[in-house]
Length: 118
Length: 113
Image (tube, rainbow over all chains, first blue to last red; front, side):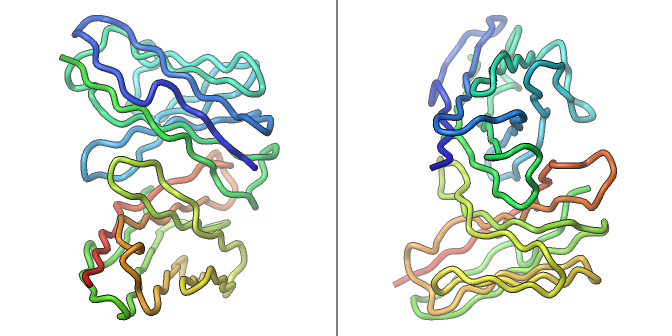
């Protein structure tokens, strides 16, 4: 159980275009999803917390107008990288918990999306 | 604030043991451990919720010293499949960080035959 599906697995786009990444919880409802970014050989850095039915909470230094998050249902959150630039190339991973604010449960990660901006 | 992991890298031969440490400057509610293979998403290993709690997963176990805000991951009789980058993730006690997981910089573990 507790499967998180992320799509696409990889995407190559041209500088200036927008890319949408989908994150779905397949067998549980996720009131909250977390979006992380990971540069090569670095740690996972939290970008934002996606809240179903309300605005996302962004971490310091993350541009909310550039990384648009929509959490329209209890099983789907999307991250749109707008006007992408080469420096946005990275591995984007979503995660969710099975349970409302349940700290006693693990984060389940999607398989990640490798974004390359040319 | 990001927890600090040590060592940064470990090289082992099959069958050897290793310890990876995770230390935070913040009061913690829990510590999570994950392993990530190259190009893949992190895979959950275990959570430690209480001070002094120890948990085991086959030959991998961990402890959590709540007072010192430290956790250690123990890998015994290592196998080739243990190779990967290990991350600890910490949840701070209370405050605005509720529910968030902050990851350490990772420890690269390489197991050779």
